[in-house]
Length: 211
Image (tube, rainbow, N blue to C red; front, top):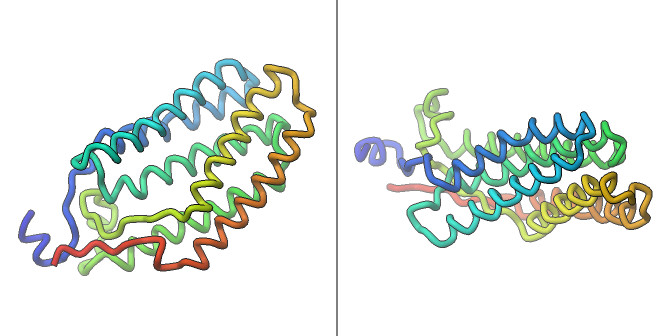
């Protein structure tokens, strides 16, 4: 392990931390939520969504308070789990006619661009030899992602809209004007967060080098 660090300069870390496992749980809950929403089982979907939210809070709390649970992989896996969960939720809620198609399209387009950018950063920061086995090996940490402030705010707004939309058919406020206001706010923060990554560029990630 030490020779690999000296030769290639990447940090070799244990990817199986509790926060990373919680992020994987969140990814696993995404298709379950999608199925429940499409089947219009909104009561159960609300409960599963709450569970997913708890895993999100827990992984952040653990990573911040226990140094040995913080990892470069987690800096990418946590937001990736959020993006997968949010994308599945927005598509399924759109299928259930609870969120408009243009808003969901905007969110998914931004997330596709950001995920592609993460793969590009991974490729550029991985020292030779750039083999597939090393590229996809989570033990080799090459960069730590640093989300922008507006991106964190956008994730919060998107999740608030999801919670409100899930609860709407349960509590009978599907046509509320406040949901329409949330649609507009979500579109605004999604656009602003996408631009923030373009504007700050290299400041949104830190290259890890052990040399």
